[in-house]
Length: 346
Image (tube, rainbow, N blue to C red; front, side, top):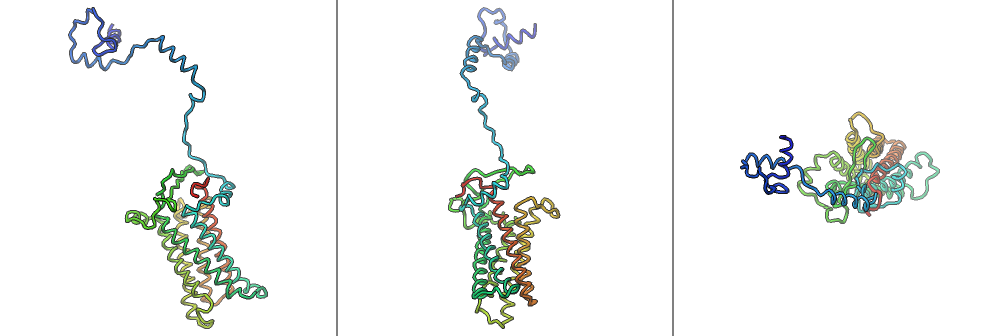
């Protein structure tokens, strides 16, 4: 009895769907506030014309297509590109508005120039018969100057790109790595309104505490010091018998600048590792920092061996350093192309 009374109340109670039916003998009963509140809470059923409702359902079922029923788009974070796909992107996509791509290119070209110069320096030491006119007087200093300019430009742009990271005005490029980590890339593009050549005080305060920016600062200063060695080694700046001048402006800048490059890249190696003592050779960015560290320490060794008067050892260290730094720059280029599936930054 009480259950059926509750059901009826949901249909005919105060403010119900159908109101109070006329002539109901129970309608004379005075409703208390508690009754009214209870009836309102119980209004869970709504009267429906079954014939009309059934007709509408049948019409929707007949007119709806399979595609419209399951037309649901689910955003899925894409998987990382394959090695072959990433290598193809290196030679088919040119994202020149991405400052990080320009930085990678500057270091690739600069390393290649140093490699050619170190080859000119090494040949006379191991095969004197291969010496040709202008090899030492022009070939070595010009290639070193060209490489130093590219390194210095890349180091300068690295600082500026640091406070433009994650400032892009587009949807971020994302992909999920094999270990389930989602990588996101959203830099401000060169020439866009979001790009800033000078950082705000808040941005500068934030990036000063990050390892990559600290590494970039050290590497930038190291690049400035290395540039001094290029000037000191230019033909005619010092007399061939001016040992003090060479020690101050060639041997020392080469040793100090190379050492600063080494510590800057070594800090990135440790920062990129999940644990500071566990290498991460499966990561392209780790490979880039590692081989750049190897190249940097060889640049420093080239200066140290010059102090000892061993020209052959210095040329060998410079040759190894140039090649390994070039390898690190190529890994940096390769790693960046994971975020460039198309020409969105061109």
